Amino acid sequence: MSGLRGLDLLGLAVGALGRDRLRTGLTGLGVFLGVAATSATLQVQDLTTRNIEAQLDQREAPQIQVYVWGRGRMADLEAIGEELPGIASVSGITGLGWSEQAIYEAKRVDVQGSAVTADYFATTGRRILQGQPLSGRDFAQYQNVAVIDEILSQQLFEEADPLGAVFYVQGLPWRVVGVMETKLEGQGEESRTGQFVIPMTTQMALIGQPTVEQIIVRPVDVEDLEPLGDQVKALLRQRYPDYTQGFLAPLDLPHININIADIQERQATLHSATRSLLVVGAIALGIAGVGIANIAVASAFERRREIGLRRAIGATAQDVLSQFLLESLLISLAGGIVAIALVEGITFGLITYSPFELPPYQWNWGNNAVAIAAAMVVGISASLIPAWQASRLDPVQALRS
Image 1: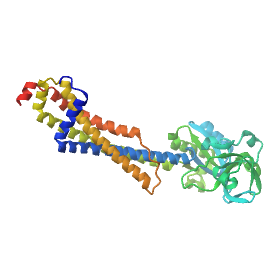
Image 2: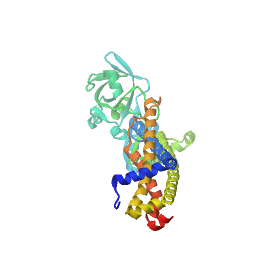
Image 3: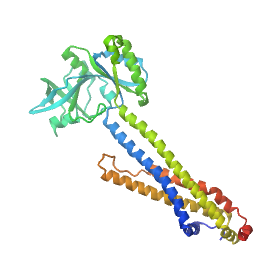
Image 4: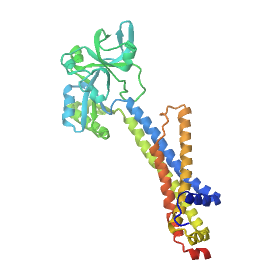
């Protein structure tokens, strides 16, 4: 029996566990509860994270939105970009009105138009799907050109190629040079109103006023959104002291908004809840470890004669140690696999039949590997000392006991 290995060792471990099914089952239940708590926490975190990522993908790039309501100037954009650190890009926006209609041939659709500066696409992160963005030439020559979004493209042109087509808004013609992706500018439900943007210089030439209604600032680091917003506000207050004087003082102008503030709040709540639930899972796994240690100690005490007999006929101390560790490992694996199967099954059912909008089901190998690894570590760690003590028993004393 010297050098016992492989299937023989596995058979001995399974047989030993089978002889005391109640104790084995209760210990496995402890592992099951611990792994189930850990796996469920990781599953909720994964679903919520993917849901947040999907919401972020629907928004424009993380940005600070500064509402100056016609008081802004192009010089303000330059000052923000030059004087404040950590800024990726700055852009200005002026709305063209709230009750516009775009006309193309016999079609009339509601539309929302904006005049923007050259860095608009870099600041908002909107990708160009067809054609090209507004060019430097368009700004320099005050061109009547527009980049429309996917919704307006579908509403006006359906399946036809929109590039080069001309539509009218408030009697003015606008030639389509590009199609941009549709994005949410901030919080709220997605609007089905089409959007288009034109060069800011063209709008200023049309109305004769070099004003900017809104300034958007994109930071290099998303973590800098809030402090950078405070810095932008302080800078504009220095440039326009009347914000802090007279009847404007109580209004706390200019108004600052972070377009992903609600998502950041949910992320913070998620991280806090995940940490708390992982602590619960760790406690459950710790209790399971105590159970495994208990069964290992009791098993070593009750099987002293068996251990002595095996050692007397040639089993090594390594064989005894390996068997005890294998028994604990089998309990941990069985409890962990059942727990993961149950959590995955519940998750699949919720995603498939839930009335709520949830991300598609995905088997997360990483999370499940973490849960199983935690169960295995707990099982082996809890049984290591009892197993080592059992492997060091003197054969003669064990047979006499």
